[in-house]
Length: 95
Image (cartoon, rainbow, N blue to C red; front, side, top):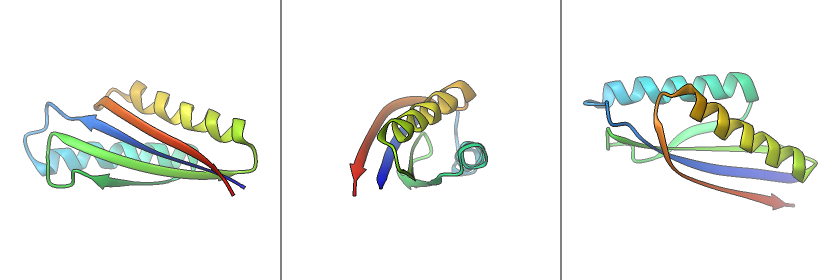
C-alpha cells in the first residue's frame, strides 16, 4: 500500500474577511474532492484570512500513480487561479 500526503499553503491577498476566505477554500476543496476523490481539508491558518493551508491524502498500490495524482492535484489547484500557491510539501509512504 502506498499513501500520498500533501500540504499546500496559499496566499489570499484579496480576502478581507474570514467569510471571503471560507468561500475560496470551500471552492478549492469541493472541486478537488469531486475530480480526484481524495480526503482533503483545511489544516492550518484557520484564523488568518489572507493565508490558508490545505492538506490532502490518497491511497494506491503504485508509487508512480500516487505521485502522478499528487502532481495533477497541484496543477489543477494552480490552474483554478483562486489563490496563489506559496508552498507545497508532500510525502509518499510505503506501508
